[in-house]
Length: 427
Image (cartoon, rainbow, N blue to C red; front, side, top):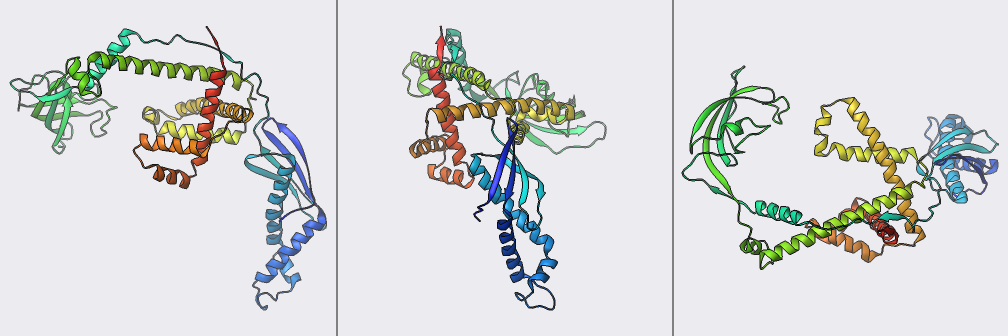
């Protein structure tokens, strides 16, 4: 349908909301109504008449309400589409129609309220001043990283000639019985780190037991224990030691360095660790500079954004939060805590969208582009990181409609790099 007699005016209700008043000429409306009447007459099934032979006046009377709804459902979107093109408006979210006026032989009138991104002028984005931080790696940091590497290279070897000491990994067979109800649980084989533990009172009781030793302990589990069967209960627990392993940490020497990769000496490893720590710090420093630049530029964006888009962003942040380990305590915490978190996430959603607008504006002004080769290289890197075939990953991204989102991510990353490179660094 190509409407010829659409007239419209636009009124700004707020930075993110506009109202369009539309009118479609009476003759065009009547022609469209006659077309719909012909369609209904062709398909109408009325007792006493053959299909397709029902008189038009009978169809008009019988299906008046349905035809009016069809007319409005077809005219309104087309008229709105024409008006949006004319005024160069790009709505976000779903337009809301109201004040619909439809009278035979009169123009069809209605109003549409749409949400739009607010207009703003991004000024001086090439001249944002940020403070350059002194990035260096201290010897203590290198030593700490090497110690972590040493600890992660530890082996656990069977113990001979002694019992359990703190820090041992102990394979045990356990069977618990609730002291109140006398209910017995099935025997289980588990591995426990011996020593004081907030979650497992049995861990401390293992210290001092001999190899192949047995014992029975009365244990009280905290109310918040992860195993709901044990939470808040007193248990009589029978334990049998099956195996004891102790942690053997290798010395920090050339042999350890050689075992970790292409290193000839410990000094080679130490040098690589220092280089990696420096790269990590430089990346973090650059990230902080980018956040500072974006924060200042975002101040130029109006605070009022399309609420439907803010709500979607907030719900996405909330979904990710509820799927994270940090949300476990919240679920038992109650509604008030959840509402507080929603308020914080709403503020975060606004900040995210402001950054989105800033980066889009920078990309447009600087004519930044993402080529097909750029996209394929990004997919290749993602595939390698996730040990997936690139072709298969691309197919999945296409099926899920995520290619455009990935392309936008690359574009915005380039916009961030541009802003940081252009920033004037204060010494």
